[in-house]
Amino acid sequence: MALFKKRTVGKPGEWYYCLRHQKVEEGPECPAKDRFGPYATPQEAGEAMATARERNLEWETDPRWHDASKRGPGEQGTREGQGG
Image 1 (spheres, rainbow, N blue to C red):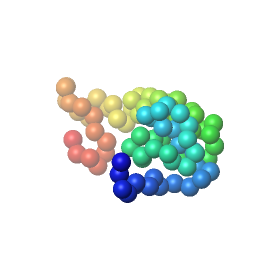
Image 2 (image 1 turned 90 degrees about the vertical axis):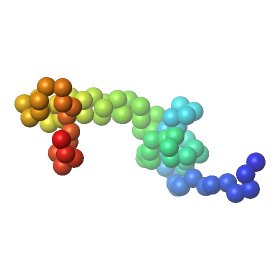
Image 3 (image 1 turned 180 degrees about the vertical axis):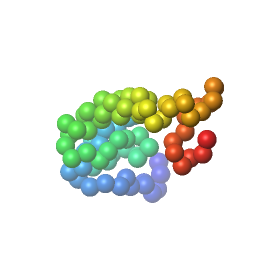
Image 4 (image 1 turned 90 degrees about the horizontal axis):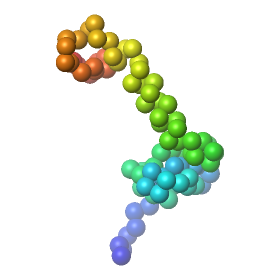
């Protein structure tokens, strides 16, 4: 058992989705590496995985990211300003 427990950062009334426990938590209970948030309501936190899937799909289908005319065959896309 640790002598000094590292406190999580957050405020009561902020809601998080814990990736490790797959549940909604108020004021973070788990480390930042294991959670999404903060969200304003428990419902928003409960929809965190769906929100992440939607954002990933938007990113994967973003024409600015997958502009084949600006790169040669076999090259992966890069965001502007990140080289490539």
